[in-house]
Image (cartoon, rainbow, N blue to C red):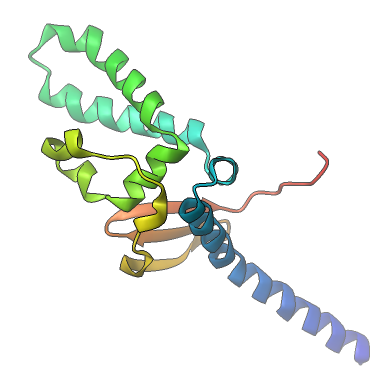
Length: 156
């Protein structure tokens, strides 16, 4: 009977740890942003996946609007690749999180400033919850941060 109780308690503790872990990871991410710790941000963000996703989204958005321009098909995607590669960095992520509205208004992009995430108001989070067994989403002013569980073994 004691074995069953201990196994039950262990299962409850593991489930609790599982439920709390994304919130703890998000908190560590915000600490890395506030302190400007580029290495910590880089270790928590999959920049190649972000760059690939942004490139696809921007090419699709501007290709439709510029379908009548012949130069777009040759120069547009190359220009977008260069811009995304330059700005999808730890500093760029901090800047986007500190001013997500700048991305929605193309006219203000020239005013877009890189800053450490020190001035990010985390109270503007609309929701944070699991979207699947291995994924977690935080929505801040319409900007969705997706977290995924991954197994990272020390020493491997």
